[in-house]
Figure 1 (tube, rainbow, N blue to C red):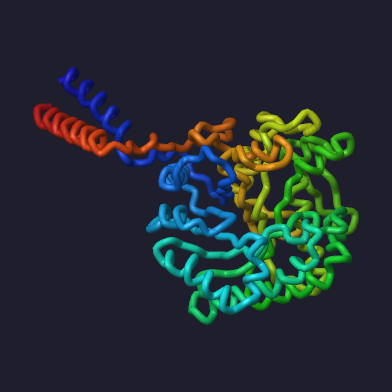
Figure 2: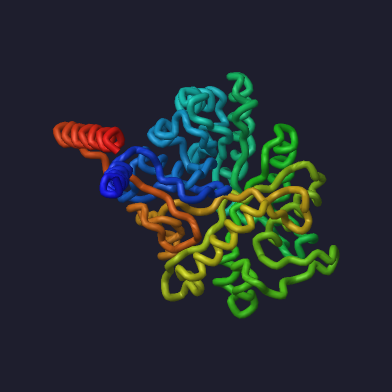
Amino acid sequence: MAASSSLLFRLLLLLLTFSDSPVQIHGLQVGINYGQIANNLPSPSRVAYLLRSLNISRVKLYDADPNVLAAFSNTDVDFIIGLGNEYLENMTDPIKAQNWVLQRVQPHLPQTRITCITVGNEVFKTNDTQLWSNLLPAMQTVYNTLVDLGLDKQVTVTTAHSIDILGVSYPPSAGAFRQDLGEYLHAILNFHAQVKSPFLINAYPYFAYKDNQNEVPLDYVLFQPNQGTVDPITNLRYDNMLYAQVDAVYSAIKAMGHTDIEVRVSETGWPSKGDENEVGATPENAELYNGNLLKRIEEKQSTPAKPDVPIDIYVFALFNENLKPGPASERNYGLYYPDGTPVYNIGVQGYLPELVYSSASTKNALASWISSLMILVIACLISA
């Protein structure tokens, strides 16, 4: 009996190794940015498997890749999809906007849960004033298209901004947008208030530390124990920079007359590797930043100025992307290597299935082998 049980256990373990069931180790109550500027990433179907095993239910794309959206069909994953800056001019044309929605969005609904479209990304970080001028009209036209098609209740419209849109960030209660962006952002905020969509920011305390490591305490940006800072106007204490940045954005929005717009962090992260002059880009710091951040998200923490609004964050990024231009850090923000191996340990583990065999004969042989193994397991159960 003992020998049969031992054999049965080994057979079941072997069968699980080749099964299609994800091994869910731990759930992540966080969104993830799924960038694809690389030539070595796993297929979308394998990525869907990985995210299911991590229990990640919110994903942000930078495009509307039909292969990705199809791979996540009939899952519980909510998607933010993106319209790149190169599309903004076209999206001011109602016909072109409608064609894009009909071709890129509607075919995937409702089987894939697309909940938001970001029109442009960090537009005000560019020096293209024509792009600045096209941003709001493009957002409005895409939104009106969704209304016309009856999709506006399930898909909202927004855009993602760099934290650089702030002209004043400290103290958080004095947060203010750059003066040269005032007219643009005021109109955009009116749009958000009208359609009830969130204001997205990409915030990276890493850059503040890298550029001012002698003035910015490392523990303060890594969510480590530290004395923090106190806002002299509100007397609110901040023990990390990210929360201070979010509240500075809330203050800037309030200064423009709005208190009913939610701020969400569409990107934040820490690079695990960088060039020689990229101080702080190490796996140890990345592990601390993302690991501590995930703990705070699990605790449903809020910022000091918005105690009733849990932080809403999308971590950047799922994978290292080997074709991203710029300094080495740009290619090393991933939580995972393309082979599914964690870049560092943040207390979670997912499962990326092996490559799908392309040979039909190999597929058939493997299927036959698994079927035989299942029969053997059943026989062992009966005899036991």
